[in-house]
Amino acid sequence: MDNEHREQIIENAKQFFRAEIAQSHIDGACKRASSLSNYNVNPFLFKYLANFLTGNDDPKSIAKALVLPRVLGSSITTSFGMKVQSLITSLFQGLGSTTQGIDIEFIDAVDERKKYCQLKAGPNTINRDDVTTIVNHFDGVRNLARTNNLNVGINDMIVGVVYGEVSELSSHYRKIGQNYPVYIGQDFWYRLTGKEDFYFELIDAIGEVALEVDASKVVETTINKLTKEIEEKYK
Image 1 (spheres, rainbow, N blue to C red):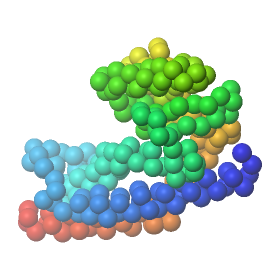
Image 2: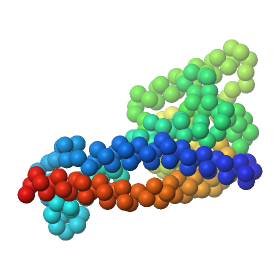
Image 3: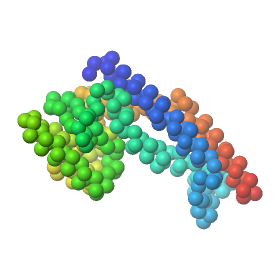
């Protein structure tokens, strides 16, 4: 991958996050988090959490204790996980696959063999049932390849995990790894791009998108709206 191609992929990643992640984060998660009706408030905990976070339980502290986990936690992680395949295909044109159970196909920059890859978001994003499904898909592709006299080996069927470290892989991924390779984080992106540090470049580039939309002001506005509602309800 030359420098021009690398820069284009980085820009594609930023554009994807602007359109698919940041905007929905603002219009969806932050908007929902600004309304008290969208919380299942535990009356035994909300003042405790406010005091734990800020040292007091005034309405704004309560609002912060409610808003921050919502907009910085599970909602954005779930949204990202659902769009992993779209992210990869938007960065690398022509990698999509028509093979059942395979998300993308690419030439591995390490061993220069064609890989049939099922994409996953992170090191804990599959369950026990997914193990059987993935292995069965891979077995099916290899059986079809043999029927068609194609050279597709066990190491050519892979799971690509977009972020994380090998040490973080769940037991479900490790079970898949007994049959087929699981590449995660830096290693996955290196095989995909041929650049050892591309994973970290991509992380930095995506982080810059939040600065472009001035996300800190969005979060502050969300907290202020919820603060007013708490003041009115508990005054």
